[in-house]
Length: 90
Image (cartoon, rainbow, N blue to C red; front, side, top):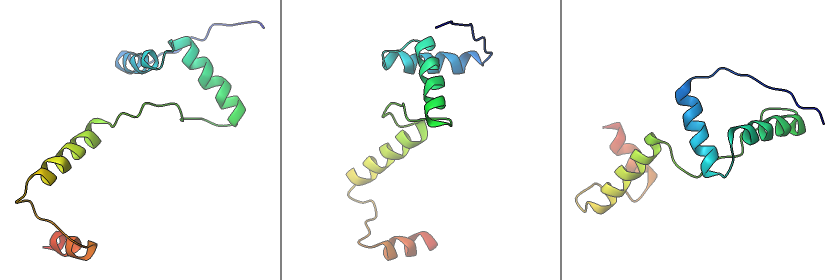
C-alpha cells in the first residue's frame, strides 16, 4: 500500500485538546486521523462515535448544581412535573 502525506491547518488549541484526548485513548494523531478516514469510507459519511465519557464544562457545572440542591434540605422539592412547571411559571 502506498502512503502519502496529508497536511492540514488547524487552530493550535484545537490540535492540543484533540491530541490530549487521543493520548488518553492510547492513540497518536496519525492513527486517529487514519481511523477517522477509514471509518468515513466504511460508513459513507462522517462518524463521531469515538469519545470519552466526560461531560463538558456546562454539563459538569449543572451536575454539581444539582448535587448541591439535593444536599440542601431547604431547597424546593417537587413531587410531580406539574408542580415543577407551576413553580417555573411564577
